[in-house]
Image 1 (cartoon, rainbow, N blue to C red):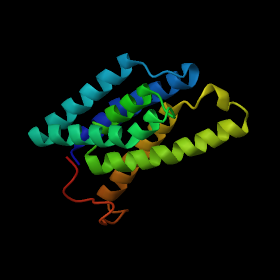
Image 2 (tube, one colour):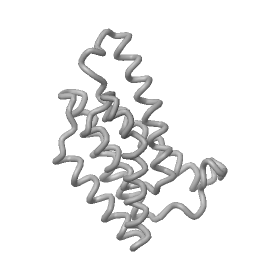
Image 3 (cartoon, rainbow, N blue to C red):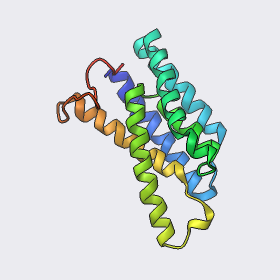
Length: 164
């Protein structure tokens, strides 16, 4: 993975996801004025780091992230802002990592939903941006662990030839 990409993820992606999570926790809304720049910066960073290939990886990552969560939106289990935020986060990742981010996001969302339900606060909805931030950071951590050799490559988690 390119150092520029890693630095941008640490300095831009993680803080912006944190802001979205806090905003969603407080208001149960994810503002477009935060999501649109996040997506555009992700596409720009990927393109800057890898040229046309980076643009394709950003588009693929965003599509994988959005399509994976679309059924939850269609069943009214998630709001459109959550789908857009996950797609924006996916623009920072390649498609395989976006899929892992969605898996970790779903796990974090399940834990968060159960915690809110057990605390009696479920009727106000689940602030899913918290789960998206958690899942994306978990996927980024997994990617970095693979880069330094802490995680081995497998058909389900390719660590070679997919990072920009």
